[in-house]
Amino acid sequence: MFAVTADRIDASDPMAGLGLGEHPDPEPAPGWTTVQVRAAALNHHDLWTLKGVGISQDRLPIVLGCDAAGIDEDGRAVIVHAVIGDPAAGGGDETLDPRRTLLSERYDGTFAEAVAVPRRNLVPKPAELSWAEAACLPTAWLTAYRMLFTRSGLSPGDRVLVQGAGGGVATALIVLAKAGGFEVYATSRDGAKRERALSLGADAVFEPGARLPERVDAVMETVGQATWDHSLKSLKPGGRVVVCGATSGANPPAQLNRVFFLQLSVVGSTMGTLGELDRVAQMCARQGLVPLVDTTYDLREARPAFERLAAGEVFGKIVLTNHA
Ligand SMILES: NC(=O)c1ccc[n+]([C@@H]2O[C@H](COP(=O)([O-])OP(=O)(O)OC[C@H]3O[C@@H](n4cnc5c(N)ncnc54)[C@H](OP(=O)(O)O)[C@@H]3O)[C@@H](O)[C@H]2O)c1
Image (cartoon, rainbow, N blue to C red; front, side, top):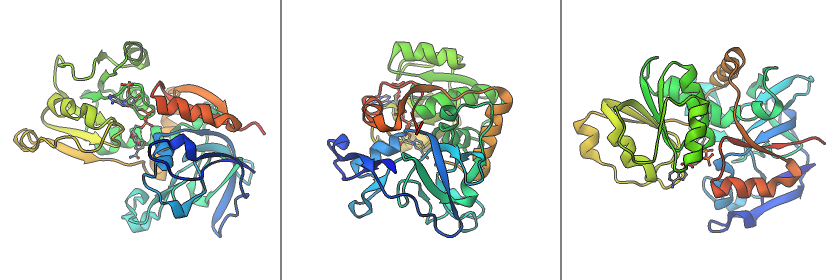
């Protein structure tokens, strides 16, 4: 089958290790099944893999991609859950299984004509979403859902700040936060992206680092080092910063004085459970929420899609489609 793979690791030139071509068909293990991929969304995770973050050379070549929507062996339209883990080993939450892995880390991922996954890792695709829109849910939208509704401690009516509005997770956060009844502030480096954040539902937008008219109950962090100082300064006493990523760097000054004096909470969040994926899909269907697709490319034209993601030009999700 055709597949997009990480063939080697190159931290300074990640595109150099990107492979496009033939790859062995999936051979599902007992309890696993095969999904014919119709659409698969790109994530920053795919770039991290090419840079060697979270993977070692001995796992390569490996098919990239965490997210997919497609057709299962029974002909059903499904969304693939990217977290391979045992809920029992994680106290009922597969994201807390110490042996948890994501598609494309130990097992071949979704940027291929077909992908093998555990049978439990499928949820129905809502008819209201296109293949490309549904393919945005398993990583960016699931992560945003868990950050906001499981990890943030926010109640409807609270105020939340979303940093780096243009990102895949950030656009999902804005839409879901608005639908969840929060007042939504967002920052972006780019004026046009700030305007688009308003059209997505943000109540007010700001340049990175700008003083906010009022402090917020929680900050949703995906940018990391570049925005961390602003995130901590923007919180009310007792506020919470929920962090799922650190695109611009993972080691900003910790500002421990501010953390303890204002009794702030720093909370990590990663992906979500199968149940949360099903709930975010149902929420989209019921409330008419549509994942924002920045651009789509044919699976066989994946290279410019990766270059666009790496350039940080996106507003929403880049999706690869498979028409073969
Ligand atoms: N833990 C998890 O489960 C999980 C799941 C998904 C993603 N993540 C992580 O979360 C991060 C975001 O993922 P994504 O897929 O949403 O990435 P993305 O689509 O590439 O978005 C990144 C956004 O961050 C902002 N940004 C990047 N560099 C910046 C800088 N130097 N200063 C200010 N803003 C900057 C930009 O927003 P503006 O251009 O609007 O400023 C950009 O659009 C990644 O690090 C990813 O690995 C983690």
